[in-house]
Length: 352
Ligand code: NAD
Ligand code: DAU
Image (cartoon, rainbow, N blue to C red):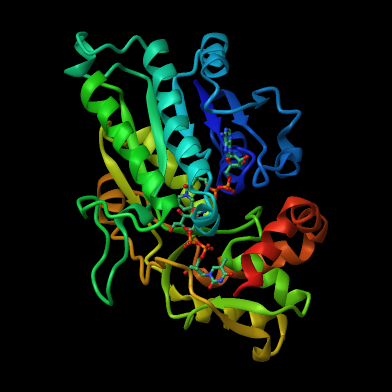
């Protein structure tokens, strides 16, 4: 029976993971969700599980060493799944320092607490063989590999070459995780996933932003020519992949996760306009994102062949359900975009 620390469980992927584990994972004794509730974290995402006896929410910062140590002592975690991060590329261009402290220092703080609690030291036997029954999983991103040209795919051995402050911070965190594995024998996995979509995604990201604007007859701000390509994966498939790595992953290994589902941004925007029966005239090509990565594509051969994971959602089904979810959840959208987000939106798109 697992005692899991999930960080960032009130965000998009984290909250989907909390729902998935509490709902579909038999071997769960305890799941503690540590989240700072930044603009991206929202407890409404978790209303349905808040009374589950196996679930505990802690409002706090992954950079708070005393708090993280106290949680390890109190709950005796054997598993850490680290989602908490500043996750939006455009915000990282406006405010890089926050990304470095949260994403890098926050990761190191968690690793230190796990190392202390799991008694991992450089001179003990765990540098030769991993301690049984414990694992630290770093939720990383395909963006650490940088950008692809028209052909090729990211494999786990593609050189790390991040292009934004966000991806540089995620790449740096990956390197710290790797170092704790090599130096202290920390039983880690790093997963690098492609773009997720699905319920509870904050409407600053492409799909929910375009859906919200189209629904309200507002302009759809497409960066540059809109021909940038992303490899889209439904968030539930990502959650299942993480569980698969926890259960079957070889410790110390990196696993890429992706849906073999490359789409140009403009294709997604047009799809949303079609489904909502809105005119193409809502599209506005705006100034491109600085350092904008042209194309991402994940080679998922390692996780599919070695661990037996495969995505279940077709894009058609996943997008259909996602559009329906946003249309049915106006109240959730209205709540998350009130306040600070409106200031961000005005600042971000005013000069476009
Ligand atoms: P998100 O922005 O929706 O959620 C981030 C969560 O982290 C929020 O709940 C926020 O309150 C919390 N948080 C931020 N700073 C914190 C801190 N200092 N202490 C505690 N909690 C803090 O992010 P997401 O899209 O769900 O992404 C989750 C993870 O997955 C991130 O690490 C991201 O890099 C990675 N990832 C995301 C995608 C994607 O498409 N969204 C793809 C691959 C990997
Ligand atoms: O690839 C995984 C990454 O996917 C994650 O690591 C990040 O946390 C996540 O935010 C996401 O990053 P992207 O930058 O790819 O996602 P975003 O939704 O911001 O943008 C997707 C594409 O759409 C990208 O090419 C930029 C473009 N875009 C985005 C916005 C917000 C627009 O054209 N207009 C917009 O207004």
